[in-house]
Length: 243
Image 1 (cartoon, rainbow, N blue to C red):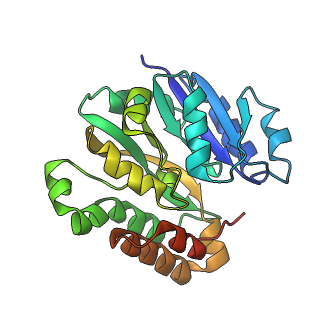
Image 2 (image 1 turned 30 degrees about the horizontal axis):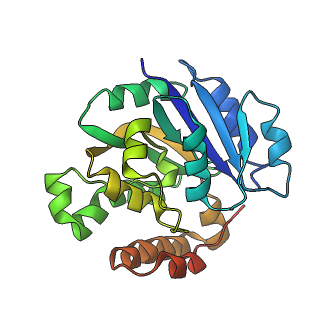
């Protein structure tokens, strides 16, 4: 079966990273390699990462697109998986990725993201699931029906073939936000995009910080304005990092 490299961009993730790496140690079958690309964290993230059998690299730029591209550049697996530091994956993650990409028509895939703190945020989880289909249906209907376009985001754990990643040019490093949506549009020129029916669990820390109504309003507004081609640099001002 094709080998899988898991790439994790980090910045001050000492609270979330250990649980994520502990889960990755339990994968069956195991990943080919785990790569942590840290953006010069000021907390204990680097020290904690070094407690695990991972490849550790430091990025001089604190931006996910740059960090994920750096991880992909040094990855040696045939398949790439991009994972947020606050997301827990199923122990059979590797098998799901291998099975999904065994279909040569599929270029990019992702999971169903359950937003969870003390309890699962079912409203947010449902909206995220719907957004995967509704956003491209509204803004790129031709590609939704003709090319099987879906919009996947980072908390859905994106995965693809390393060869396809390189063919499309990776993540656009000029984008400080919405880099995954842009990546979906470009990968869709290579093949279909699928959201598989398997869940991952993502932190609800933004909901806790902003409150659900403000969080949903910000997420919807950013997606809508991005679709109307508003500058991602301007949009980034409304999407501050939460730790």
